[in-house]
Amino acid sequence: MAVMRTSLLWAAMPGTLALASVLLLGCSSTGLRPTRSSEGPADALELRDTGTVMEFAWAQVGKRYCWGGTGPSCFDCSGLVQRAWATVGVRLPRTADAIASELPEVPLEAAQLRAGDILWWPGHVGLYAGDGWVVEALDRRHGVIRRRISAQRPPHRAFRAWGQSG
Image: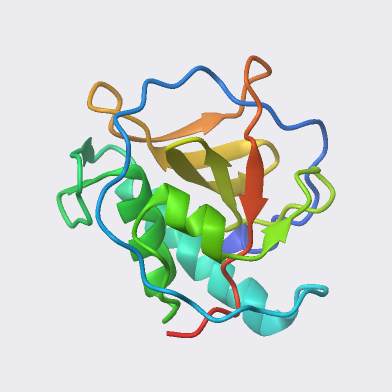
């Protein structure tokens, strides 16, 4: 826990973002429509909340993947993201595609991304952990993992959940 708490300010995100090949089984269910947040620099409340979101996500590493899973013993990609943000009262859509259509998009540049931002690939989402890392429920073989984003396939888009109503 101490390591996670000291990682609250994952502000510097050097390097370029990319994505390793992923075997995706897709995310399930229907979404809920959040309200839009305003853009701007992170404040103390946002940093605290994103730290809590990432602590939850890190604590799930090692759990198994299950299609439609929202925890506590297994997760799918959007279930992990949804539950992580729920720890700070943020209500998110249930599927990867609903997240992409309903949340405010942020530039997919290392200098613009913040820990807790949602990285999106078609049919898949993960939580940006800072410094080129992602926490995600990858697939049945890997489960919930933390991994460095590789150079083979970058995420297509990024979204910021902070500020959505709960």
